[in-house]
Length: 84
Image (tube, rainbow, N blue to C red; front, side, top):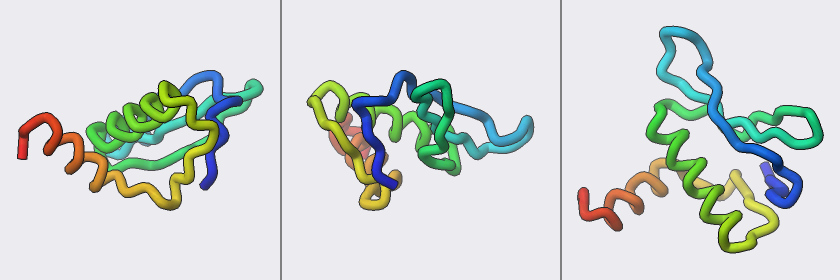
């Protein structure tokens, strides 16, 4: 999925179900919500939102989520923080 960050108003989280660990990452634009990803854990969802926030700070207009690995982002963040 190709995401046009220049038209996204907000990016947020949505719990799939009350007793479910999966979290959806949602982008809102033009009074509509769009599912960006369904993550297996809150940590994956947070990593995706941090990644998108970094892309926005860098002025990136589009992000291709098809080329994105949440597991790889988590591993990279852990390495940068000295956790691994």
